[in-house]
Image (cartoon, rainbow, N blue to C red; front, side, top):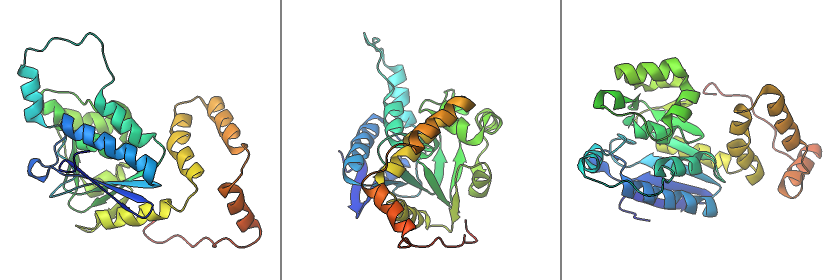
Length: 264
């Protein structure tokens, strides 16, 4: 992993992964994707929850267009075999890997940056954050899984509007269309993301894995098949940590639920 492109550290059970090209507004190129892949795999091995954030003035301005232009102008021969898009593989490792991720968003969250953000399971935006899909104005199409992932979050009409008009959404507008679930004052996204990640880390590993891997797949199924998958998962034997937590609740040793706060 190239720490100059993607930083990595752990804080207890939480892995902190930071895009680190502030002079390029954290634009994503091939080297960054490879470093991100290594960081995400490492987090899956070492941590219970991951946090994604960007160093500098923004989360990510998306695809590194200068590198994309240089690649497009080269006279490249087509490879003999087609391989899965590296962005798809890495973002799916975030979205449907062994641990959940929280994204801390500030400044520009556009193009590929928005595609990366929507791979996370919980998103926090501060008041400086803005969101867009400007690819259409630059003659390109989304390529990091956005047609699937972003569209499932915001719906077709919102995504089509963003792509056709180049419209940018404020963090308040992004909250209304479900891009973010938490809005915090400027500069507070990472702190809130770390707080949420620490809370999520208290869940059992099995619960977090099912939320990341079973729940989105149920959404892809028919009504009857979805209920069947739910039945299969809810009726699997509970041993180890899940069984002990049920025992704590039944015996009155579990921490009582608190009333929802105004923020929730």
